[in-house]
Amino acid sequence: MESTEVKLDSKRSMQTWFSPVVIVLTILLGFFIYKFILGDPSHFEPCPPNVTDCDPTSNHPLPGDYFGIVYKGGVIIPLAIALLLMIIVFSIERLIFLSMSKGKGSVDVFVKKIQLMLNENRIKEAIALCDVQRGSVANVTKAALEKYHEMSSEKTLDREQKIVAIQKEIEEATTLELPMMEKNLVIIATIVSIGTLVGLIGTVLGMIKAFSALATAGSPDAVALANGISEALVNTALGITTSTIATVAYNYFTSTIDGMTYSIDECGFSIVQTFASRHNTDGAPRA
Image 1 (cartoon, rainbow, N blue to C red):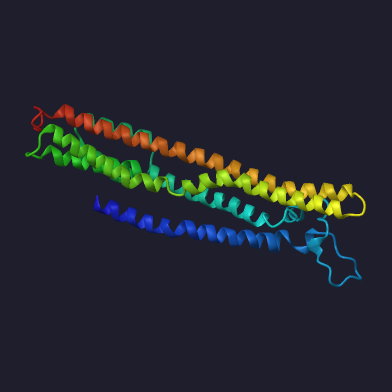
Image 2: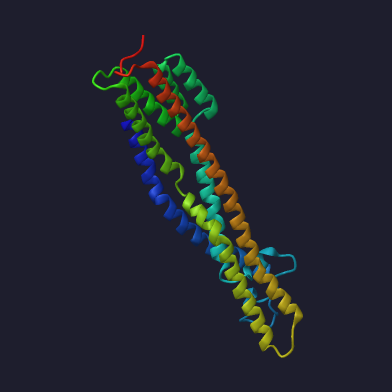
């Protein structure tokens, strides 16, 4: 149990700095992409030959050049890109971690093997199977089986006290594992909420800019207005895309965690029930 706690402490220390570093780096990368990739002059109409102080990015994007169109979305675009990068990075991180948490083999097969070994009273073999399987479900199951083995030879406690001790061990082991499985889900859930809102802020700012330019023009320019609206809606498209990906990722990860939690509960219930059926009220093994 101590080695498991040491490993979990190591994982927690890594997770402590991982999230803020990813957030800072993705924000910086978002501004880099916006400035130097989307804002490259090659994506915009060239300046007249006789003009020396012309900024190409102030011109219209080249027809069909989406990099230039996205750049014209305005100052909110770097933040929207950063949110999209965040959801990609955190989704990959959660996929890797939860895959490791499942262990080396199928969790369902592992649970069935544990139940079979419990029915045949092969406790040491079940503990060895947990070492082979690894992962969060195996870690909790191993802790419960070791407590099961310890309580089987305990002479000073009655059956109810032993069952409580096993249940407490399961709860403590689950408490150690569950926060690690749910790590960074709060960030993903937050991006689900704010992704679309950030896109809408960019759209509103773009629309204000487009209509302000139209109002100050000498005559209405339908082309300029259409371009302004198109550029503003880029923010909405990027925000909705980010929120959609975040929603799918969040639902997938929560359902995966729920499945592993159910497997932990199933193994814990089997261990407790098997112990109760094999021991008398005074805690001694039944003949």
